[in-house]
Length: 143
Length: 488
Image (cartoon, rainbow over all chains, first blue to last red; front, side, top):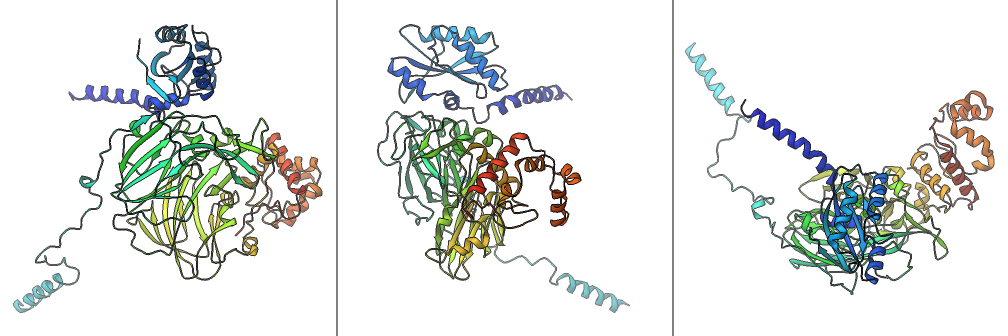
């Protein structure tokens, strides 16, 4: 009997964990999230102008719908320092990417601005990778 | 009385020692057979994968263990197999006139088959070259990230199966612990799209001691589906429309083509060779991504079936082997006499979409072999609605109708747009049950076809229009060339 509350807590934790597991299936890896929002045209255009591409995971409740993706893209587009036309989001894989000019806005400032916009939608940003040249994905540092 | 009791006891003792009694313990128990699946003897060690920005510039596929065609090369004895499979984007022809924008491993669909044996090490490298121009037509999909997922490996997916960007190279190695015919595929989101675009192949792992039978011929047969639609931006390849992935059909699991080794009726045009009296071993893999295969060879029986390609999973004397998506089997059969033995997915809606091939004792099979089975390659319409109509017809109507293949449960629809008006056909497809109450032609047809009524399929106006477009296209083709029939 003494173990019952502990078991109940364990079951509750398992139940809470299940939807998260299902949502992350096949999109769990960092590279999967990056791949879901990688756009070669955006990257090529950014490198040609000495800009960078930043990839972020989104932490929060997401339904994975196209409408939701549009809302995320709209919010990200309005963040300070984001290159026009460079936002790519995946609601299904909970990720977003943008290109930016590091000479105009620092990575930390970009992240702060993006997070402010997305927090209004109940989403938190998790830095993943940054590209500043083809075929090189650097680990991004949280500010 | 005492004597009778003694006899009874003696009889009971004899009965107890009869054939049904447990055997007496042997003087020395035989040594237990070695467990070939003893995990303590398996190798799970694999160094971390390496990712670099060094772009490989040589051949897209390389390695002595690779077979580039259906005919499998013998096992390379080297214990370490160096395997390179770079990713490319290229146009492939999946059916006559259907030029499809594909994504590949090793610049071909399916990717090359890798052959090794239990205990061997695979040393794998892959450069994502989806951003490179490849020989041929340059109308490929935008470069993107890709990865490699080997079902034959036992490794951390988060380390070895990472996606790499265009220009990046990933290298990793693993040891083969189980025999089988294993799928490999790209595991980058959306996986469904990557597999449906052509990123798959087979890794054959022989048992450590080899197979228990000797085969005269060995071939790989990979079944897969394509979901193709004419390019919405109307791009063309050599004057023919470019076909791209139809995401709607893909998600609804409604393929436009179901094929063996990447091509509609491909092994009909180029049959697998065999001779009468030979034992043929087929390594069959269904990569899907979404359909099941009922693999069957007309004219023979599978002497042995090793499910998943492992001789420990043996069945004898089978007619058909059922393979779900990413399931495999090795099937062995005798070729009893000269002839063309027809490989089909016995789910005939799939066969009619191109999952058909031949094992033939003739250098070039006679056309009558195909006509007999009504399975010759069909021409394909190019107009979007007609393409959809054809695909719907082949997946829903072939059980009862043919086009040019003769009457079945319902009429042969060759020439139907010349026999009936569009208005009549539209009303008939929308509500055959109502037509049967009022229309004299409909009533006559019911009588002619043994009172088996055409069911109301609840078709939408768009679907009816697509069928009509397809029927009109079929009726505009030279006689006998637009056939759609599945009968055996």
